[in-house]
Length: 161
Image (cartoon, rainbow, N blue to C red; front, side):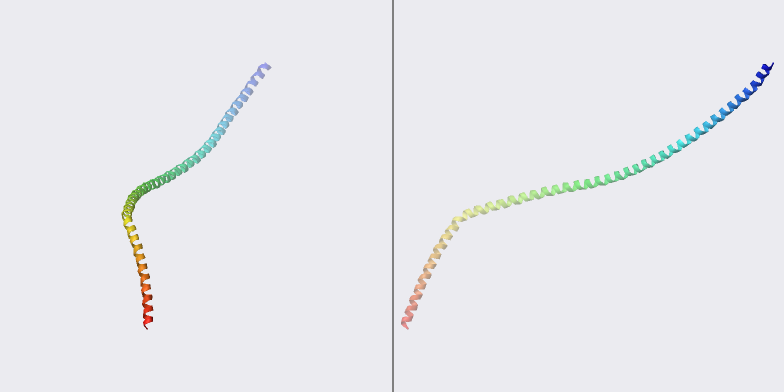
């Protein structure tokens, strides 16, 4: 009988102990779930903050891209203006070269004509020079004769006086 009583007494104690263990495990599980939930919330908060930072960085990069695209557009416009100016300068340079070539050809032609004229007139100039030399010699001769005559006249006029 004692053993049956002991056995009967043991069973409620074990049942209470088991119930207490089950209750403790349930509370422990709930606590672990709450802790897990809080850890997840902290992780989600950190991920949201990181996402916000990444979105801000993306927005800043998008703004930079927009600014760079605007600068590229301006540079392309300036480049186009410079290309047009370069083409205009090339055309003007070509026109000036063409004009210079025409003027040079005209001047070369004039020089050739003047050289031909000089060649044609050179014998005449030579003849004129020779005639001038002869005339100068005659003038010198006449001047000498005049000086002699003047001298003779002076002598005669002094001898008359």
